[in-house]
Image (cartoon, rainbow, N blue to C red; front, top):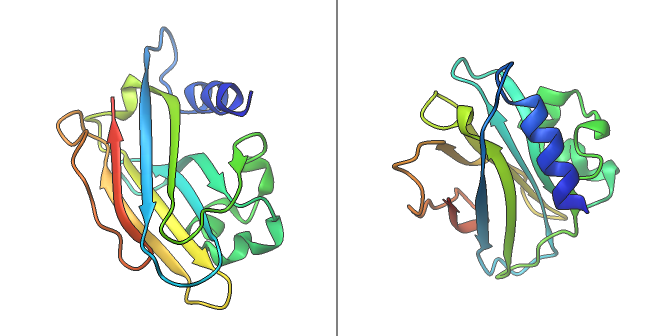
Length: 156
């Protein structure tokens, strides 16, 4: 049900007016074995000018920790409504988060960037852990994060 809500929210929020096409996209985030608690991850999109366009997923359900996802928090003013219905459990060290969402075709090859902010209790926060342009050519290409993410890919 959460996937359906996320799909509807994102497809509605991030498509052009009129007929919008969407495609299933699998986002796979594998964390390093960093030796700490589970990570909170915010997956969100910015447009070509860098403006916040919408949230895709939040791993970690306690809103009191969202302020540690600093770039996402700044872009949304910490509004938990941005992630209502699109949250899951935090992700453990060395574990993989895999989610499939229907993303609007208009997001690809149009200057949009997918970002991941990461935070782990009692460890350093990592804003903009991953930033990857959403392009059809970039699908399946692994990207390394700055601190906690060992590998991120999106596949269509």
